[in-house]
Image (tube, rainbow over all chains, first blue to last red; front, side):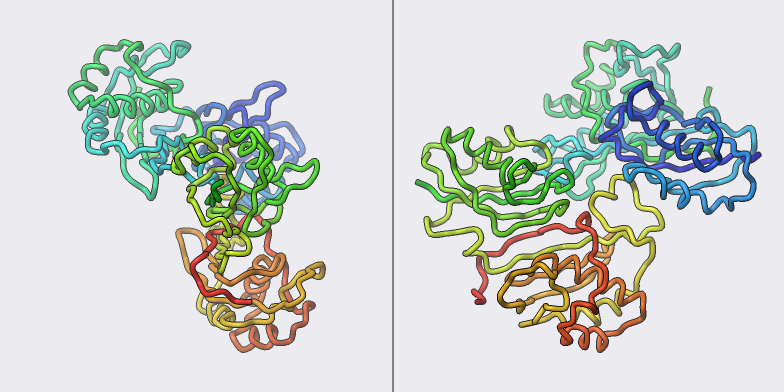
Length: 251
Length: 251
């Protein structure tokens, strides 16, 4: 028995998110189907967390227990990719201790959100960005984002339906930077509330347009008042970029 | 009456190419439908040339004659984009003299072909590259490509079904360069034979693997023997990058 960790990239456009759901095309189900095909028995795949419909991944992490010891670990990506649809690509396979779990062993998740600022983005960029057709003031955005550091109560940016007992998350990094025509928001935390990144991005872009500064954002954050949040940015721009397993455990 | 030139980007994934065909989803038809909607009468759109099923564009050119003089020219991209599907984006609109024609006035076409060399490309790159999972020798590729300059008989790389009377094309530029995980082949010519870019790219990558050098390629090119061409590279990696109207007319 081996415990195998996969690093997975997917194009969320044509998926109803990560998690298996009856009658829907999901990333988890597509990969489980191929793992079962290779192993000739039902095997469950454990993801580091769900991603919503339309959200992409450049480095989702998921593990499964394989009864086969004969396949060299480095052959897994090719073996799985040859059966998987092109909108899922396995980037890496590694053996882990038997008690490793992609969700419970993860110590951080990093997301990147791509905001396209060009007057008219290319059609081939559209599925992977939020086109806002203007260049926001990145300094003001980063003044606001600088308050997203450390143990933060994220209630303001939580979805009404979020069932988390605690709305506190430990944020290690939250920064905007420019990459070609895109403004990228990168955020790393121990974990995230449901739709939190999209709510944060949509709100920050809206606040910037309204001329809010860092102090305004600090007040909104500490208000824990969801009615002060802005729009929820669309799923197209969001990528689960990487999952970390080597940091300090928080909670 | 105004003659309007559009610069158009499209994601070819879900199109049966540029040219209108009964019962198929094509870029020309989608744009014509919106032009007709705005003008409330049937209007034809003239493209600089066809692109095949699955081929993308970052700068296709097409013109139409508008009976309306009241819409400011700079409003066209927004007006058209608001009705177009997201896999077509109008980047620019310009007024041209009445005798201008996107096909007959064009003096050059530039294509870029994206070859992904990473062991495993991201799922979100897959629709826009040809993944070859290795790093070819770019110097050898450019030694071969250096023979693609000037008036060239391209018979070796023409499709059997190509009906062009002359197989000669004037190539201004043909070069490979590295961009992130991709090797990009950029080629600029007065015009191209059907499937010529994909045949050239597929052949050059195959020749490089076989260890061919510049002189070998020169011999193959002058043989005019189609049986010496390699595979045709897939449409996914190909972008019609731009169309030029300011060069010297050839033919």
